[in-house]
Image (cartoon, rainbow, N blue to C red; front, side):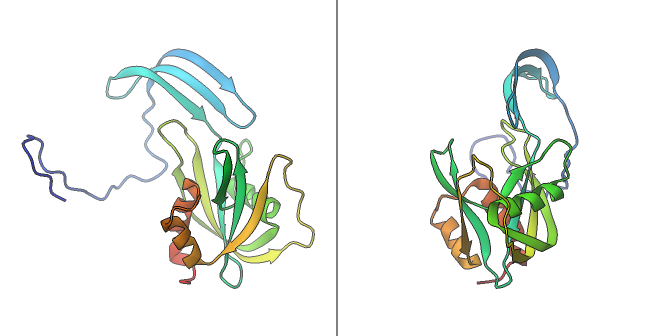
Length: 204
């Protein structure tokens, strides 16, 4: 890509980054702790900070233990998703099953529990696909993504959490791609995780 114009800045040329997670830590300097709150699942902090480049300012951050997400695939190649009510969105979103990590919990343990609770399936084959920051502008939450295959319906699924309002649905790979393109109500982590899983999914 070439940028033209009157600026003295040289044209930007994209390069492939060699940085991988976990990122090199560059913690800012704490100048003042303005607020700290711990909720049921995550915390909130408001601080005055000096960044590594010397800039000073006030920042707010959600401190989150992280989440684990599964892209479940049935033996006949269907993707298992959920229509889930989200109070912040004031409506239902189409999502892959996911859950919050318990303190010091291995994400692989988290997602095995969550997939059974939320979908009623047990997966016998697992592949770790990767991880990513969900919203690094205001949160340190990392999503750990797994491909779940060789699914078996549970005879007696676990009771869901009382605050969960979910419906299990099946999509083909093509159907989910189309849902993304027509801007159906998917959340960001599900779209990103679908892209990580795409090379391993059926074509149709």
